[in-house]
Image (cartoon, rainbow, N blue to C red):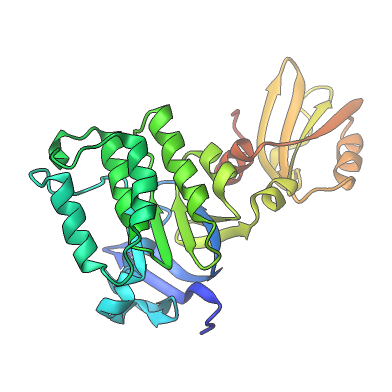
Length: 302
């Protein structure tokens, strides 16, 4: 296992009843930067996080976090890992200042008050407020401020901006960008908001049916996918013969093909099937991800 990796998994497998949530997953995330994880519901993201945090154990395979076995993390190991999920769960009866005092005591050797103050001032909280009185955006900001103040070497964020308004979301994203001034911190960021991924991520990991379907920089992933618009009389080629087809639709008689890993030779394919004219263009990240995740439905209109 490499010391240069924040997370490493080999053959990681986890079953939930008859459903295979993680299917012999292999993964290697280097230390530093923001690694975004996306996937359809049921792809295995939450299961992966529970295994990384030691909340569950694998049925087969192994994983390490910051060089340590995830199923045998010590108290000191856990202090190096921060976790914020979409629920932002804190006791509703607790006052903000008391929660901060407890966290400061638990993480006394790592506590960064400046990091906490920098973020929390954007949310205009008072120490005497109870957690149950905070809005969803305020709870999100409070949770993230606590996590950053703990100075984690690894910060796992599972849909941290879900349900937040535009202003609260921007504050959270700005805080994450600011915290990356430290080269030693690694962030694993899970979100269905592709614009957030595009703004934040150094690398993009796509999970599908419990396996890694793609792992690259977001720009490199987009470079693999292109949209071809072709004027082909009648029906055009059968969908199962189109190389690299991810999505297809026909608009006003013009054929639109979203394809992966196809170069100039794709133009020859279209000409061979009667294309009178064609144009290739790049695809933005949100459409590239959507096309990749729905490629098994490429024969239907989209």
